[in-house]
Length: 270
Image (cartoon, rainbow, N blue to C red):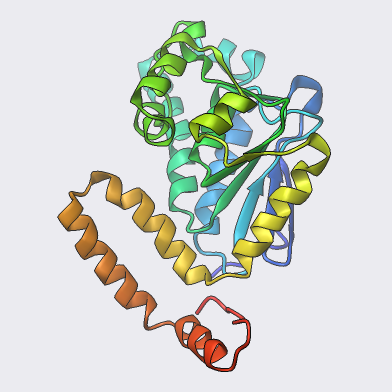
């Protein structure tokens, strides 16, 4: 296994304490756009998190009043115009690999969204497990606004499952902005909090998850994603197997022992 508390990020901000990692993009003067380098490092970071026992939950936060303005116009979109089909496909597969890595990292991810959350930034929020926003959050899947399809980085598969097919279709066809109030009402945001409370709310939720049965959380995340492509009968059988595996963990015994002793269980993730 890998320890990541001391990880040194080159192309974004990273901190870790008490089992909680906090990631923020670090170009606030540009509303935190992504670059080729930050895409690749984020992909590799989430891939490594799958093997990190010392990280229990991840907060993907905002910086300078904004979450992420998507791919940098000068550093990404301009250079893409000069790539051939092989180069373009390599890029789109890399961006998709970031989402795959987030889904498969085994850790609950909380997006703390303030201000601009558009393009690939909206996708990162979408691919997180839980989302908290401020009233100032402005979320838009802008791909059709730049002449592309709305089907980017899994949007046509994931977004309808969060907010319904019709609402997702509206956002993906038009590229219009979804307000924080809409996002909460539609189920995209779990809650909306005041800007000053955003970081503390996200960290408090992450702390609650980090103190929970981490193996059980990993299994929950795995089944939430795998069951998309299962029938109901397959899903019930898969969950039976998953739960039987979890019943072999020491955390399951700890919960029973604590209940008998009228105490709060202290989970250790094994």
